[in-house]
Length: 269
Image (cartoon, rainbow, N blue to C red; front, side):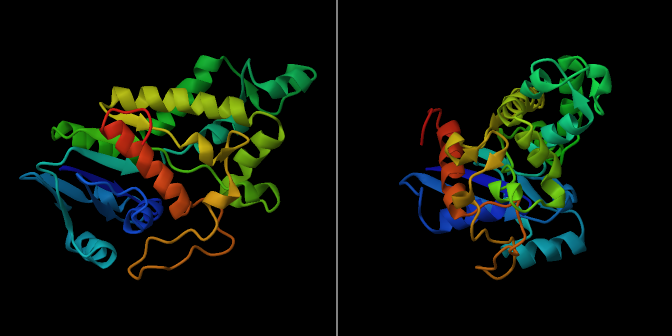
């Protein structure tokens, strides 16, 4: 029996729902989940082979959302940090302020001196993105877990939903603009390369968003976001209709498949 533990923020919900639905369960697999909103998982400690809340307030929140305030790590095959701002949309925010050679949109640009964004070497843009990712909740948790001797995987946060092309959302404006400028595919590859290197430097393995769920490079296809659940005490609570950054159980099943493939050393689930 191989047991993995998945920890994360609101993006944990789609994975937990997919597992509960039995979509990728197999004999010999076990999966535990522990989720908390925001940066709450930083208020934890690892002692005696267990990750537990470091304060009464965080313990209460963990129990409310998970039914427990701790996660046993001894005997676990891997801990997966899911979401937690390991987000491809971060590359779009870098793009908002910078441009570099290789971006398709530059072919249609006139005088580069007229660009509103700064024109920089690609390496400078990559360094800026890496700094953001290294400061993310995902890699802060990953470094702590690696230091405790745990095998760690970091699963990508979903890209914004393609619905942002029709209905702009504040959290996805840069991703929308990049896609509309024709830079979506370039930015996607740009993020994946930097994310993989940043995770490796932290001692973790990066698990990208499954290709089958993506559209136009920087977005998640609509079928993988419709009906997305919230990380909430009561099961079945949906994200509000205006949400455009969370994925559903269909997405969760594919991501869990990719996670288990990585854990078991295979290319496909």
